[in-house]
Image (cartoon, rainbow, N blue to C red; front, top):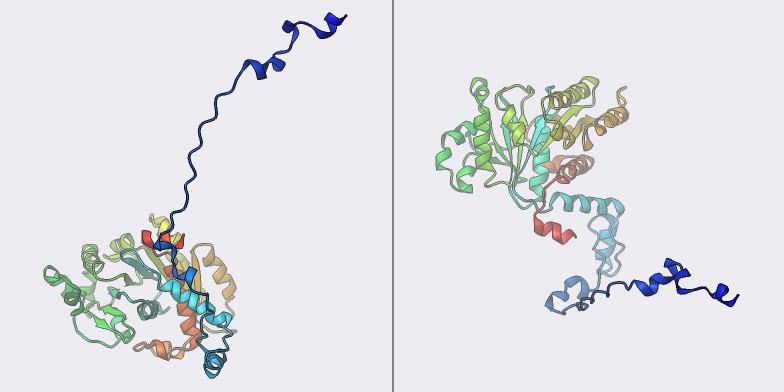
Length: 351
């Protein structure tokens, strides 16, 4: 009985033998733990200096801060903090040259005005160079939005292309606003403007991208004119401009339809829609529906309110715009800038 209870070695199950019969591989030796090497790089400003709340920049908060001898600091309002964040986004480092094409199938919706105001917003906030090119074949009016400094046009620049070696050479063909936006005008003769070909535009961009960080192109209302193919191929982003009217919104959406149908779906997905001259509580158009429509097609939608200064149709001075218009343009510029390619150093800094 005892033998039956104990059993023999052969009756022991394989599972019971496994710990003795199979020895596992010896554990790999662990690499020695690396210790942080202390260096001068550890003495960063953020580590050594106490974090100080930024001084308020506007309104009663600023007045209180100054009257208290900089002792009482309640910080910026949420609105001002938002403005500072948008400004930082607009002014972020940019790798290479970023090219923006502004389009609309319908005239009179403020495309040229948007080119000038968006370009001026960029140039007023950034330290690098910004230029707007008039590529409208139908006697473009972009050069009328800033003080005219030269009668030279893009045709003159192309004629002298072989002699362009430095920025000052290009500057002789452009006009500059008080907010540092430069404009390269189109020819006033529609026949000459229409002859502005895809090759001409490509040559122009090849010159400008050597000296400018941002190039905006004010396109004509037609999508079939000679330079359009090159404009779309060169563009990094599109701004599609509409009015708040039914036909304006339909035309802007038709622009996106055409681009989708002709192989530019990627540009459509990166586009920003602008609805211009919006008046609060006026008309029967449901702007919320317009915005909802373009939000489904574009990466951002921005509304620019009606402004008496822009309605004049003359030279544009950002300082004469209403505060809400300036804020809307800042929102637009930040939306466009969110697509800027950053340098590898800037990306590492964010990480």
